[in-house]
Length: 325
Length: 293
Image (cartoon, rainbow over all chains, first blue to last red; front, side):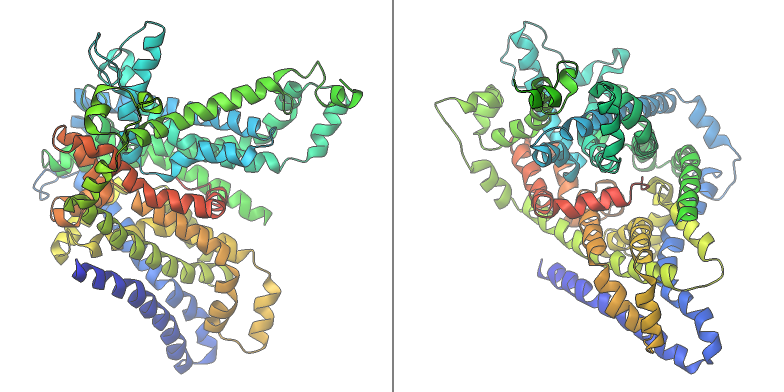
């Protein structure tokens, strides 16, 4: 334990010292060079640590994963697209893919819908910051902790026993249930229960972004409409909502990526059992349960391909922003 | 009702109007629904195991009151969980400090130095923002194994630094790039070197952005499950962070399950303190970098 403490202290103090020393050293080295060469070389020395990290731990492994996805398990022989044929021919993998699609559609709808609702509502009350905090707190905790919290919400005891799960006790008041929420596979009920956990966490995220955009709308626009006799609902539909659409699109892209990468909640709550698996968990299982590195890489490539359109969308949006600057 | 009030919330406005009772009711119901899951587990974590198994958390709100610190005492005393808590700290602090420095240098170069390929390189950084880390796991793991650092803190520090960098560079560059140009120009005229302008001007002026980023990255690393699961858990169970240990308690389904609530709250303690203390910065980070996936 003290070893760890010493190492961590050295890293926290030592690494910044090394990095600062590095930047200082580059300037000393540049002094040796002729004056006119310096501006051409200096930026690359400043970028070098970041580029090294990005190349070594993001770009190079990404290429490695693509190559692995075309190889067999030994990593020596190329097998063409066999791993992808396996993926699209395996019932388990397809079920995971279908679940990811449910995650993508319903997590996005839920988070954007409730985020918008809460953002608009809190804008009209005096306890705005308190209300925002309540909705926002779940985003600060880990998905593992959120899963534990919701395991107690969904807890199920056989009929007749005292229900200790909040949800089953609540529906028990009107004589319904009890329902084994995480075990019902019909209509993917259990997957929806997992999606709710993530939606509970991420609504606060959508809320703060939408709320910031809402504050950016010129109040005179709304006042003018009210003067002309528009109801609050008409003001929202005719003025506020159209102006919020770009923000809603941005939040949606973030949620789509979150849905595609979903892992922690499924891992903690159901381990992907009872048809709740998603592709990130399928990949983890192929890696460590079955040692199928080729197949696991193919799943990662499918995930990457699904995210690439959003990557280009973001780049396009970034370019448009830069053009305005 | 006076005329002013009629104008403010006239009969035509409906429940959607400012401070209308219907609107308040809807919002308060939403707040209660959002708070109940956490409150329920929080109360249960202070109840004796036998009570928590037999009755719902709401029964504890009525007499006879029966609360105990036993669960927390057990969790803190049990070496695996308290060690995991410290491991989380050892992982999170360096994994927050390192990327901020590396990103700040890069962001400064992107903002205030001219070089060919600057825009294209930054577009690549924007593209890397959304890369799923799943696409890097296998090659990075075999790289760590061949370096002999799989299972060590060093491995997760390196991985988290790289995974956090695109967002850190993006956020800091947007902030540094919006600082007033004249400040840097006049410093250059006075003969200040890049190093001087960076440490004397760019860095101090970027403190709000750096604080926001530090909180964001700290929470991201503290709350991480997957990175620790892949790079640590298989090789070295002694170095596991609290997220992995808590998730393990769930799947063990027997031993220690009664302490799950206390363990979960222990893992939430630091994020909640950070959150309540520095919410302003955290929100700024999310709003400022909303392109991140």
